[in-house]
Image (cartoon, rainbow, N blue to C red):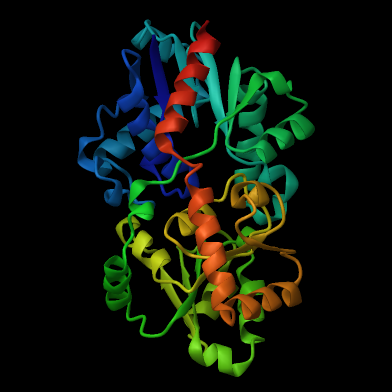
Length: 375
């Protein structure tokens, strides 16, 4: 069986989807057992970026000239309906698409459904993103032979919002990279030293964009008693996203007790999580929520939202709050930061829960799904 996977997000700035494709395709190839896994647009083995710590969410996985050429190919294929991919590679049995809207006609078609933010909370995305996601739903999701959903919550949204048949959608959770499970006290100390983190800290990791609810987090932290803020900093890591100029300006003002690190490279993330006293993620909507599972794998207690896929991923191992309630978030932070026993309990529960998320198992389930779709 020959499977071609559209990995165009590896060529552009991307967070969760890029993370998924980077690790997923590596493990698909490791577990393929005779299945020919190819990457579109013609990315070969990605040998330059074979080590997990080298994933860069801000840059392409290939040279800029090669990136522009491949994005040009994608632009043309999406605007000139044709079966060019089918003619170039006539042996494809299944095409799994991410960005290509005119996949080969003679192959089975699948895609991964990550979230439905553009339907549920369109105000948290640019109009262009909303239009692109809805076009993808009409041209791909509604005609695909099978779909992977990254959570039961996302599968439910697909059925509810697009009226897709539930039997066409397979739930396959993401994995978590091994380096998060292996993070040590030495890794944590090295990251603290590199980033000048000299006090215990409460951590947030994510793109600074409306959906991540960063302003509510900042307000809740500032409302904590001075004694807690003097002991624990609030550290935020992540690139600036869409429509958050006021929030990023607020972060860069360096209010007392708050540190904004900007984008933190993948190889530093495990140590950053492991060094935190607690991780807080009051997102308004997630299709999966990588940072929650990563924090748990690194042995960090978690506070997150009781909405969308987050309770499913947290698996009873986190404190869940209403992400619209500043008071509820503030109470959860205060209680966790002042209770070493509760933190120890959540660390144990979190490590156990995080073991559910294996890239090897994700790849094996995906290969079985491909085989069933091809028949």
